[in-house]
Length: 188
Image: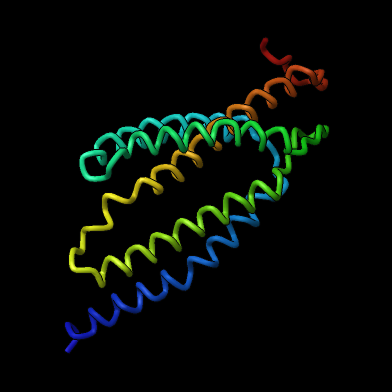
């Protein structure tokens, strides 16, 4: 009897996942436009992980190029679009220099645009999957997944430029502030 409940539990898990996607997207937008304090270690860690993610992403796109037509080309195109978008996002970010540190508020329009892009790509992928499910060849949708690599490249390019620019801004902030009494001077 308990073995019969396993397919039901898997179906319930898939339904729960599908219901939580909109909640995750809303939370992504809310966090994307929230005011934050720039912490040096977190920004440096984010920049390092962005570079590592970019390398792994292009390695994955190169390997996927065997099944997905022009996957590395789509990934490079997405990256080429994401780099200037990251610079624009950094230019539209509001920075506040306070005694406790550097605070920043990202552009709500860029955060909304990126969230809508992710939602549109998820919706398009589900639509493609449903149509491929009803088609005669179930793997016919695989060669048309280059857009997924383009969106991934765009997001990685955006976050790479944004974190590197934020890191640079934080460094300038630290050098411009005089050390408080009892605090060692910043290294140059």
